[in-house]
Structures are given as C-alpha cells and as structure tokens.
Amino acid sequence: MEPWMVALGLNAGLAALAFAAGTVSRSGVIGGVIVGSAIYLCVGLPGWLMLVGFFVLGSAASKLGYQRKAALGVAQEDRGRRGAKHALANCGTALACAIAFHFWPHPAWLFAYVGAFATALSDTSASEIGQLYGKTPILITTFKRVPVGTEGAVSLEGTLAGIAASLVLALLAWAVGLAAGSAGLHFVWVIAVAAFVGNTLESYLGATIEGLKGIDNEVINFANTVIGAGTAAALCLLVL
Image 1: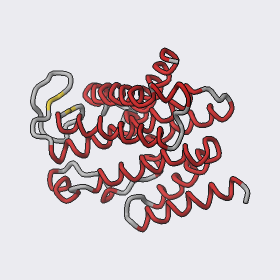
Image 2: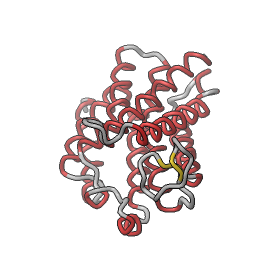
Image 3: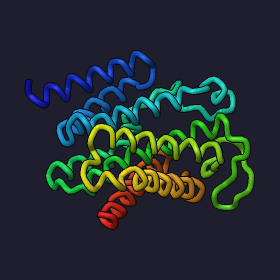
Image 4: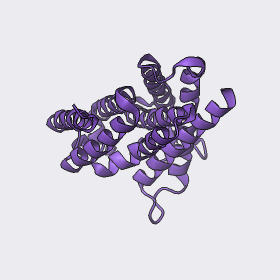
C-alpha cells in the first residue's frame, strides 16, 4: 500500500473517532486529516504518534471538568471541540519541523518537532488543569492574585500539570525511537525545559499583548510552539 494511502487512512480514522467523541468540529476533521497526513509522510509512524499523543492528552485535559469550567466561564469554546484554526495554531510549527526534517534530516529538527508538540500540550494541560484545580492563580507580570481564567495567569497546580504533560510526551517520543543514539541521553530533559520556557513566555505574551489588534489566542499559541521548538533545537545543538 502506498504511504499516502496509509497516511490518509490513519488520519481519517482518527478524525472520525475524534468527531464522534465530540472533540473536534467539522473544520477540525478536515484540518486534522491534512496536517496529520503530511506529518505521517514526513516523519513516519513514530513521529505521527506524537500528534496522536498530543491530541488525545490535550482533548482529555479540555474535557476534564468541562461543566465546572463552563460555569466559571473559562471552558473551551464550542463544547470543547477544536477546529481547523486550533489545528494550525497548535500543530503548524510541528508540521514545519517535520517537513524540514524530511528534506534535511538533522536531529535538531526532531528535537524541535517534539518540542513543539510538548510545548502545545504543556500549555493546554497547564491552562485546563490550572483553571480547574489552581488554588491561587497569579498574573505572571505582577505576581498578584487574579481571577481564574485571566490571560497570563499561572498557578502551581497548572505549572506542575504542564511539566508532567511535557515529560509524558518526551518519554513517548523516546519510547517509539525518536531519540535514538547519543541524542537519547539528553532528549527528555531538553524537551521538558523547552516546553517550560515556551509555556512561561506564552503566559507573559498572554498578559501583555493578547487582545491587541490581530493578536488572539491562536496567535499566542502558535508563538508558544515556535518558542518551544526553537528552544529544543538550540539545546540540541548545544548538547550534541
């Protein structure tokens, strides 16, 4: 069977399950199939599993305690379903890294690829868990207590959830063989650090520039993954 047929079949199946579960919208199905198929063709099944891991864990975090978050006014829009704009914001950087690795197979691109997904998952987990269980959210720019859901707010519970999520994705990448050779010795901590840096700076951007003309949550999320991917690639070049 041709690789493109496998890619299309796997992603169509995943998208159908996600749509049935109420985690993606119709536009999310289309965007997910396109992005997922391109990723599979560029980095193969092991790399594609990073997308699956991000999607499954991120969707679970969004659905967790949804009614309570809805009552607080901080729940994901459209009943937690994600659309094409979310796919591009959270997966666009990883897709670019996958394409780059396909044409220029250097380990730094793989670090950046996993770093992008780990940062996106860290952000989603920190936000969703922090809004649900965070006891003392503070604004990252002033360290003053703010209401739950304030842009740029962070909490201990959310931060720990974000770190844990990035570690899970890094360990998954290591388990499927994306961190073979000498790179594997440093892979997990590099990805965790990159995700933490991206997530922290994302909170700062959310507190300072989100809401300005043309800068919405998706723009901030995209910037978050660029920072995480860039940090992972830079650390890879330093340690290898």
